[in-house]
Image (cartoon, rainbow, N blue to C red; front, side, top):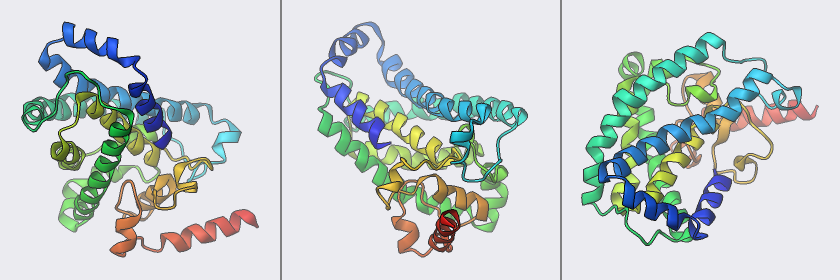
Length: 276
């Protein structure tokens, strides 16, 4: 996530995007730019982010397979096909209408597509702020989704996969997709960012969701260096336990509110066993 955000910010600040953006402003309608742009960044970011992990699951190369959190647990072709089908229904039937309705609201709140483009540091600061807001709100909504009624009627759909895989990151009940879309759009609503920053944010949010559902915990992942970043194993533990570790991005809320459910002990034992 940090690498992708840094690359995106540097690219925005390089000046190479400006002529492309001028062309977009000159040739696309406002609806296409606002609604179409957000939808493409959301869906495109999702499938581009999921593709490398799907290839790893398909090839099962021993070097990468050893980093699987749940060893030898791979999605079947049937699971992949059904998930891809259901995702397109969610993207087109739920997320696209949300974006269509929300775009005028964001414009009213100050989001603009006009030049000049935002600076690299403005993109980084705003996107990081969006992650903090999204993580806090997502924690409480996710925690509510694990109450008996909400879990049975809504959240159990997402937990059909006790060994998560990249494509299933957004596989959920339509009501859950709507509810968890609120934290995603709250940060931008508070700031009123540039449209390009919004596109980058939506892609980064998709990458992060895919990463924690990928089933792979690589030693070069962010959480190996920043312990407050949750990471794949943190969320995989949630799917394994069917509870706890409710936060999606950072570990702060789970530590503060006591919902880690012994994750640190589990992790310490796992590291010890690997050394032995």
